[in-house]
Image 1 (cartoon, rainbow, N blue to C red):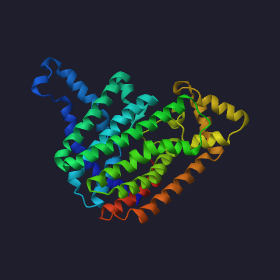
Image 2: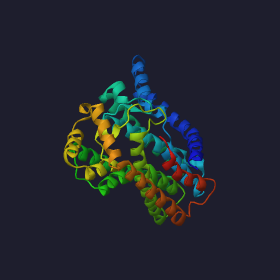
Image 3: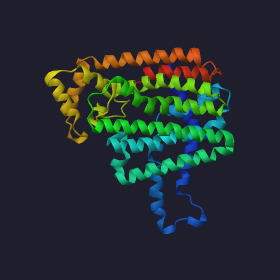
Image 4: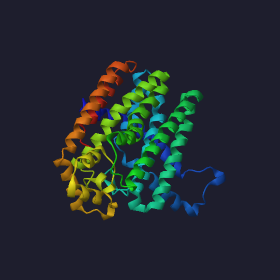
Length: 355
């Protein structure tokens, strides 16, 4: 079923991308009263090209696909959900842009990160531009879904992004402090903010809001999102150590370079002893550029030797199973086909994917 979902992702991407592309063209369009003089057109074109870079790289479109499928599973017309889905995808592109700067990441979707192409200052500005473009899409959404639903959609975006950014604050703070005393529940707190809500529950709640879901139904979707989101992110952390993301990523162990507090690393913190423990703490206390390839490979070997990867795999299976059971028992209101079947295949995709 996971393989089936790849086709669904491509199908929904083909619907959402033209909507995004339409808005990207607005980046170089200005009303007459503030239109830049023609002599500055090369700079306007440069700005538009740079800001559109991440969106044009096109990720998996997992989040906008969940928006469309959830809305459809409750009987809401897919065409009327496209702007909401497009805004969801644009939000990912500006968030990834800023994340890459904060983490000093090397690559994004198989190419150098934006700040490594243009410098941090211009990259931050590009992210800001996509951020305000997202709100423009949501503003235009009022004419499609009406004032009441349009306002509810914007409120959900605010709540979702506010919690997501809190998660980023906590993750950065604990990384900067080289906090080695964290528990698994601490990592799950971060994952609930950055993945469970933002990647799963948020997009699904947006689709459900469009379809007129009740508060009780929205709360159930959030709980489902916690289970699937935890499984999704832990699987992502495993793949960071074991996969080249279908050739899109050249550097394995990127989370170790960045010092991210994954369940794999926290499990190693609590298992490792003696000299190895002191060496681990010293390595993780270094900045990205200070860590050597040999040191990162050593940390990866320790994770394997102490069974941390196997522990993470067991967690993924546990949360995915909980997600499946919860979907069958509590999300019966997501009943319209083929969207219901496709949402179920998304759960299998999380654990079967290799990137």
